[in-house]
Image 1 (spheres, helix red, strand yellow):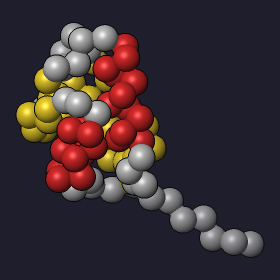
Image 2 (tube, rainbow, N blue to C red):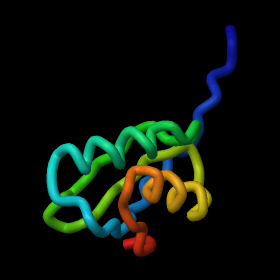
Image 3 (cartoon, rainbow, N blue to C red):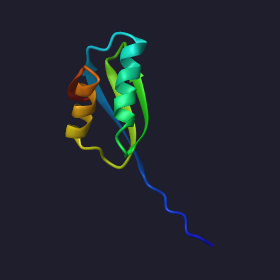
Image 4 (spheres, rainbow, N blue to C red):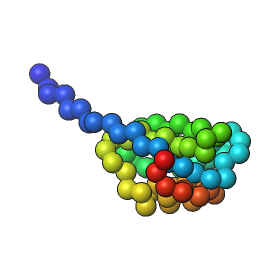
Length: 78
């Protein structure tokens, strides 16, 4: 019987400015989901917050680059 390997998932919240609509949320989500470690992204437009669930800790630089590519500014971890 094959042994199952489980990876601990990490949820990290970030403050992102400039998001105002569902199109903004979709753009940020699509860019972040391109990161290989990311399994899901949740955007809270009213709170300017993005929560990323990933396999392990993400590098802040990679998250910043993805958010910038989507056209928004990563303020930092929330």
